[in-house]
Length: 184
Image (tube, rainbow, N blue to C red; front, side):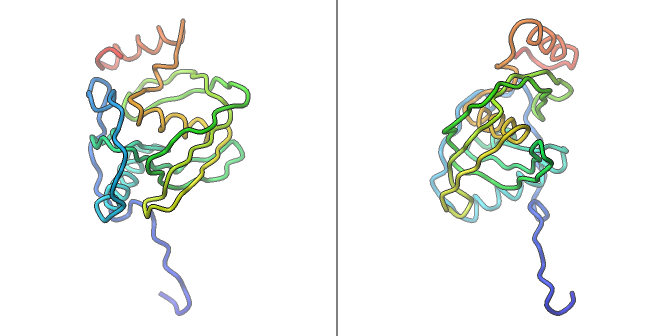
């Protein structure tokens, strides 16, 4: 490395890829417990979550998706202006979800092969902590708001399928059956 050059650490580069839990696994349907220790174990979990998210080509991942029932999610997600949002949120609380409701295609690493037009507010604000325990407020619009809502929903035991109604829900559930997944 040249003198004066700083090394940028890439999230997940030292993490271990975990299998992603899929629809039917009970850990996906239970509310997650708050994190109480901001320590090396949490740092390792976050690193593993980034590694897993990148290995699966995701833009977000909640801890319960790898079988850890703690309130943590990671994201590397663009907004509608293609601005990259990268981070980890510990003990997130959704404090605002507003703006116009937009129906956009959504999928989930835990529901592989299934995508559906899912209505979500166009703006979301999440408050929590970074992995070092510092307070944090994350605001997103457009696609990034969708990501914040999706991942926070996972930590409450939800899946994007829960927000579908009518024909969209019937089509998504048909796709779930075709994919050989258990009923939502």
